[in-house]
Image 1 (cartoon, rainbow, N blue to C red):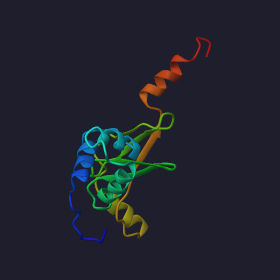
Image 2: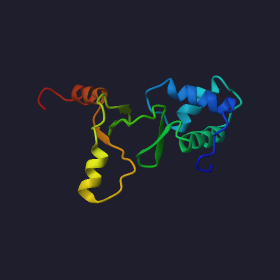
Image 3: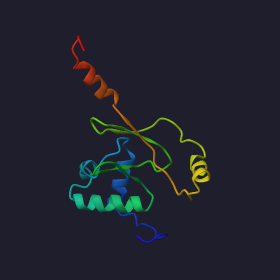
Image 4: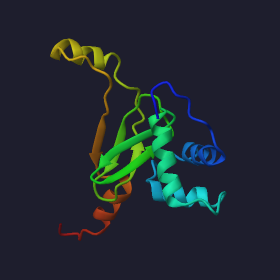
Length: 140
């Protein structure tokens, strides 16, 4: 897709976009495919992959390359940060406003012309922490 070229909103793209914006779980393409198939039973996984990339290139969704080899998608396009569980892979939005003027500060300190940034926090989600704590014996 050429810069400045408007993406035509097909029915498939509209349904993919609606399904992605309806969840906060940052699904992978296969998970988006499963949701979209409920509404468009004849859609293929390849079509979902292609349209997710087109929607991302058009700035209508975010593509998250935060796990090795597994791309996730986010219907929220505004600036925000992510949390990732290192055990189960769960990805969530950080409930915190982005740091104001961080890009200009980094640009001034480094001499770089900053065009954007991604910030990811990682650790163990509450569910995984509970499972780990539940598996410990009293002597641990």
